[in-house]
Amino acid sequence: MSKFSKNAGVFLSLLKGAKQTQAYRIDQVDRKKHKDPLLSGFFGIDKIQELLADKPTATGIRIYYGLDIDGDGKRDKKFLIVATDAEGNDIIPSAQKNLEKDGEPAKDILGTETYCPYDCPKANPLNSDN
Image (cartoon, rainbow, N blue to C red; front, side):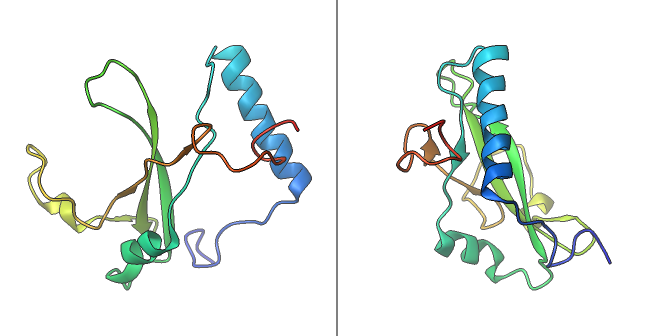
């Protein structure tokens, strides 16, 4: 079976998930010296469905890390989501257009402006040590 099937992924126990997110927080604060490391991003289900709606060959999504390049001098981390096919290829029809200039956003790449620790849910084992 392809590793890019609609059934790809593994469910984790809460303990394992909490240990992984805690290790990330410790790494970011201690080793990388980030005061408020980016912990997560929120994507609405309607936008995710809109991303996938016109891509019948989609079998899943891929999450990319990005850096904000708005010119404010801050290197703000970002998450981007794209649809992928059964071979693991990103489905981005807008890639056929010229990348030299920015235009109207195609519904190929989904970003968010809702990030934790800024817009966090109440403390839970995945986002805090409480």
